[in-house]
Length: 216
Image 1 (cartoon, helix red, strand yellow):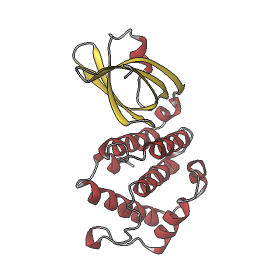
Image 2: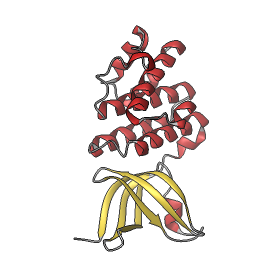
Image 3: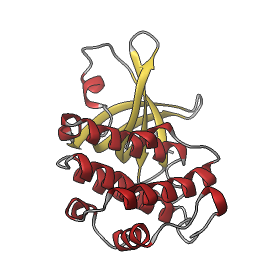
């Protein structure tokens, strides 16, 4: 088996590991969530390349004896710098990443999960404040679909069925491309109902509520 592995990868999270290295989590279409180490200090080229929401071709060296991975190269095709230009955009993007990690990349539906994440993050790059929240909701509703949870229209007192306005909007966005969401408005009450319903479905499946959802 080759020790050099290639992926189409989206960086979800990066954190310090020791004094000079970093640890990164990626969503890949080939294996779902993988974790790899980035070696090098502040001047390392790889350290600058492997940042949250950067996406591209990832080369990883896998040591089968220690079962460890290190990043060898990251050829980025999407930097998504626009996400950091507006607070609501980056909060929505963080909620996307947190959700993907919490659900381990969507089970085995890695290609679908990768496609959904990419389309939502691309749309977020130019979204305004209100559209950012709608796109986060769009992601969560479609994520529930990937997990096979959307058929649960009522989950008792913890997740009442949404009112007609929210329910109709959720049904509509099932076939709507992410890039079109910013053009479809939703009143404040319906938005709150749709968010509560969708987040309740996911939190019931996960067994907890994610903190990032409170920021969208």
